[in-house]
Length: 488
Image 1 (cartoon, rainbow, N blue to C red):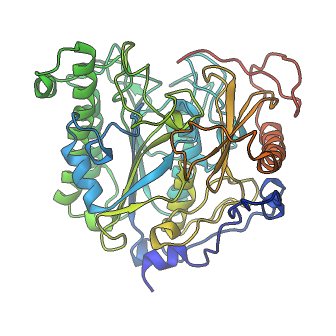
Image 2 (tube, rainbow, N blue to C red; image 1 turned 60 degrees about the horizontal axis):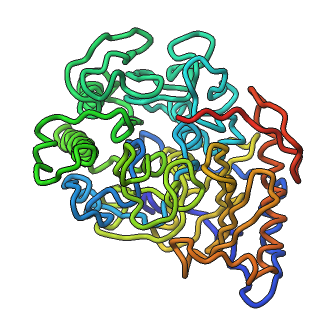
């Protein structure tokens, strides 16, 4: 039996089956929002029999349509396009939130952001943070004998490099080079990086290549080479304020919009850095046994036309901060040579929190049994099987534009709601991926079932999360309280 088969063994069909299209029975789905016991999932692998290395590469504000392999006809991304041909491209890959910090928290914990407490983006010197009580992926892998490293944006605490909040090292990273939020003053010559608790001063160069250079240096010179490794590379590109090297701006000399030039060059700069890292994996002869996942934390910034941010949603509705598809559907690609067929495309809905379960399965780790884990192991989907989930895909972004801030997806049905859960929209993503036709009035039986499930799930999630700095607001259906929200 292969390591891949071990990692997915025991997967059974997802409990979130298609809703009947002719009537409103939803009994099969009710259990999804009810408390359940959490089965421990364990793959029987360890470093002695080939536990894979893992690289999680996370872009910042990269839209679903920003890469050549996702259909952009201007932005040049040769390395990521090649990577897509070497592995599988996920066409329905979701971030766990429409903004950055919550998405990151879900990747590391497998838990939806409102449950793990990181419910919104984190300004400096605010109390919101990824709590030590959360069990982070690098900590689990370190216990399994992995060498661990984080490079790039952190954005999971308000008091960065300050004992008042847990730092990357407290969550299991042995080596880290990070910023609290954005590279400052921009991606050019940033001076706010901290390495293993010590500020490093101004660095010469541009953010993504600098971050990848640190990752490569760790791989070659600082890690324990007798251990498998877990490497998180979280770039700042293409989050504003951006800066791109002249060599990448020169590729877009035929464009006249300076903001567009800078953005497109910034994505190419990200692509260049990604290519450097993939080349390094080949150089040190570990690529064949390394599981690499690439994705983004949310959709693109701005309106895509006039305001800063020229990223593309690929035609999806909404952008960063929205719970419509353009705010949460993002690029997603996975490569694992000899385990995942090259050149594939997969339309199974997956979400950032799935990476927690997936990597745990690969490493032979245990999924924590003392808490709700919202993610599922996505490896079965790569073999044509269903993903087992204990909860549906769920989003809550309280700085979303307009009224609609909550969403849930069950199979192809997606319900979108306001924060008080008094206004609802219903979409069939199989036939309407751009969310143009609200079916709430046409399918009242489906909407009624999803409304109840969404209300129950929202109440469960918010009850578990910390209060932090909530301010009172009129109670909605589940008695919610309004959290503070400051635009990122």
